[in-house]
Structure formats: C-alpha cells, structure tokens
Length: 239
Image 1 (cartoon, rainbow, N blue to C red):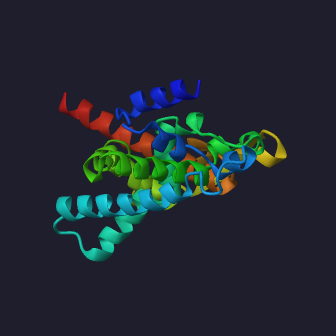
Image 2 (tube, one colour):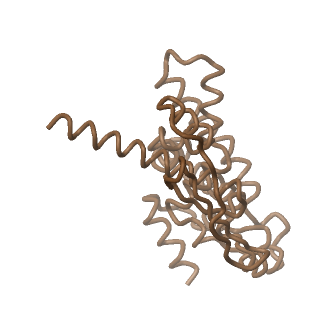
Image 3 (tube, rainbow, N blue to C red):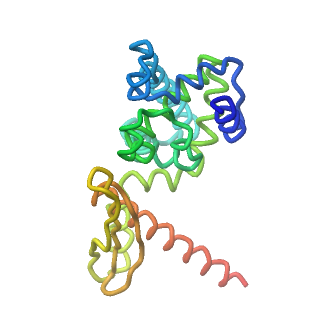
C-alpha cells in the first residue's frame, strides 16, 4: 500500500526516484516518526532545510535571468511572495500533496493534511529529496513546473487583500468588506468561510483554518474572476 502511494505521487509529479526511501522520508511528518518510534531524525525536517535552500537559489536564478531590469529589492519581494508559506501550501494543494503525507493519528485527526505549515514544509522536503536523488537540474525542473509556473497568480496570492484593494481603487468602486458566512468542523480543526463584497455584490469566496486565511483566499478568487472578465471583454472587443 505504501509503495502504491509513493508510485502514484511520482506519476503525478512526473519524477521517479532512484531511491524511494528519500520520497518516503520527505513525506514523513515528525508526528508519524514519534508515533511509530522511528529514529529521532527519521522525518522530513532535515530535507525541508535542504529544499528551502535549493528553492531559494533556483527562484533567485530564475528572477535574475528573466527580469534583467528588476532591482535587488524588487527581486527580494517577488521571491518572498513566491516562496512564502501560503503560496507553497497552495502549490502543494495543486498536486494533492496532503493526501500522501505520513502523519501521526492525532495530527491527521486535527487536520494536518490541510494545514499550510505542514504542506509547505512537505513541498520543500520533496524538493530536497529530488535534489539528493538527481541533483539541482531535476530539482529545478520540479520547481519550475509546480512553483514558478503561473507566476502572476502566485505573486498575487501572497497578499491578495492588498492586490484587490489596489485593483478596485483604480475603478473608484464602493468600499470592500469581508463577511464571515460559515464555519464547520470540530473546534480543533475549524474551517472558516469568508465572502468579499463590493457594496452588496459578492465578488469572491474563500475558506481557511483562520478568518485571515479565508479572507485572503476570497480576495484571491475575486482577483482571478476580475482578470478573467477583463480577458473575456478584450476577446469580445476583438471580434
């Protein structure tokens, strides 16, 4: 069963390990290692440390080569938005990484598979594992495919509320408001649902483990909807 899970994920990310134990280690949370009395460092924290460094050099190299007119401060801010915890967690969800994690029963029951910190750490651990398995080129290919792809959307995900405010201010829209419209799940794993409104119109909905995270996701979906509407309008004008 474990081998089947590992193979399924490898098919999903289009990278097959020469050493499967590295992938298992990358997916092993400390709660699982503690519960099954594995060696005290037989979990993904060391790989996360390595993957974080690999991600920083690959993303820095990408920005340096592709934005020759961008100043150092701008590059630092853009890199920070691309490799911050919420963005990496979003990337991890795109490949359903949480489904493949090895968690202790308590952590699993408490919603660990959906927690941003656990997902972002696991993604960096996978990067570290690929680096050890095949080197910087393969790790870089993974990063380009699953983290630095769709960069405009990833950057705006970093602080969607601010981006949305700036977009709507240009059009002199009515004030933006965020409203909590629902909560579900047990107290230790509560999910909040927020809506963002312009006047009485709902323009985005999002969910998260905190109201702040839910509001950011609502703003993110609102921005994507606004941009899609703009693209549709441009297409319609051309025809």
